[in-house]
Image 1 (cartoon, one colour):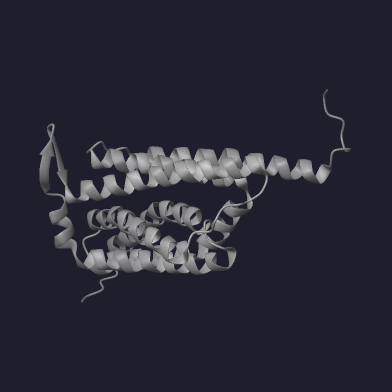
Image 2: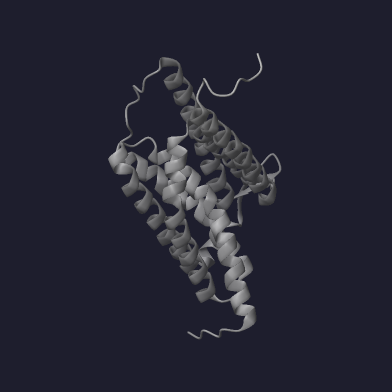
Amino acid sequence: MDFPFSTEILASLVTLTALEIVLGIDNIVILAIISNTLPPHQREKARFIGLSLALVMRLALLFAITWIAGLVTPIFTIFGNAFSGRDLIMLGGGLFLIVKAVREMHEAVEEAGSGENNRKATSFGNAIAQIVVLDMVFSFDSVITAVGMANDLWVMYAAVVIAVGVMLAASGPIIAFIHAHPTVKMLALAFVLLIGTALVAEGFEFHVPKGYIYFAMAFSVLVESLNVTVSRRQRRRGPGDGGGHQ
């Protein structure tokens, strides 16, 4: 296998790596939500296994490019809508995420109302099974993007490996931050609901531009960051400092 390091190849590698990292945001958010259902001592292990499986799955799918191409071929038609294997995977993954997000939101509201955490922790095996299923769903998006962006297989492999490495390094602080701030966790659940709805739409061949979703997520994170900053400053100041308006 040749590795011609031309300017065009390097530009393709950098661009594809950046896109893979952006697409990996979904993976990190879902991983944070699922790992939060585990006992604290198992969360780090779940994070490492989850992202390692994401890497293995992406590389395996790149090996099976011909099979992936076959998944876009319509299998059956219902009311004029043709459904392929990829559509069914997107539909199944999207519905799972919607149900997961709604259940987690309900649990969060119930816990806040009761004032104590009586929730039973998810088993480690169950959490990993959920991560595997969702890794597969998100890996399709990642691999299809890679195939569309680059012509050289080694560039696709390199971009995926680098992107997952960055995700592995960044996911720890991100997940810890989500766990530490209940309002951020609720925002993350809203993202999961949004991502699930987008996947269901994809399954029905209604393509929602990723840029819209990521812009909405980035804007929400910015607003929530300002809220967290304001809350921290208010706690430091204390109730007796500064008058405030009545």
